[in-house]
Amino acid sequence: MRLKRIALALLVTGLIQGGTVALAAEDPAVAAISKTYARFESALKDSPKDVKARADGIGSTLAETFDFPAMIRVAVGPKWKAFTPEQQGALTEAFGRYFTATYATRLAQAAGGIFSVKPQSETRGPNRMVQTEVANRDGDTSQVDFLLGPDNRVQDVYLNGNVSEVASLRGSFAEPLKAGGADALLTFLRDRTTGMLAVKPAP
Image (cartoon, rainbow, N blue to C red; front, side, top):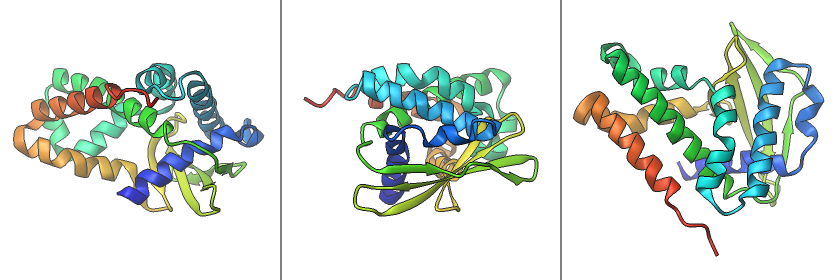
C-alpha cells in the first residue's frame, strides 16, 4: 500500500513539468487526462499546502473527467443493487468528495520527478487506456495508466499495469459494508473525507 501511495503521488509530480501531455490533445482520452493534470498544476500552485483549497480547486474537473458513479458501483460490488436509489445517490456524492480529497492529499507529496504520457491511447474493448510513466527525482520509474470508458471518463487507475485503484477501494470498503451496509459505508466516506480536509497546512 505504501508503494502504491508513493507511486500515485509521483503520478501528479509530472504535472510540474508541463507540456508533455499536450502532445496528444487530439486523442480525446489523452486530452481528458491532460485537462486533469492541468487543473492539478493550477491547484498546486495556488494552494501548495492547503488540502481543502486544493480539493475545492480540482473538484469540478475530477467530477467531469472521472466516472464516479461507475467507480463506486464497481467498488461496492453486488451489494450495490440492493441499495435504494436514495442510498446510491448519497454514496455517489460522498464518494466523489472522498476521491477528490484523496487526490488533493496526494498532491501535497508532489515534488520533482518527470511525467510522460504515450501520445495515443490504446483500445481495450469498448474502453481506452492512457499509459503514462512517472520517474521520481532519484530516477525510479512507475507505470500509471488510466482506463477511460466510451465517454472518455476515467473508470480506473492502474499501477504498474495491474494494481487497480478500484480494487483497492473495494478492499477499503469491505469492512464498513460488512458492518452496516450502505449507511456504514456512507459514514466511512464522510468521516475519512472530513479527516483529510481538516489537515492543517504545513508551516
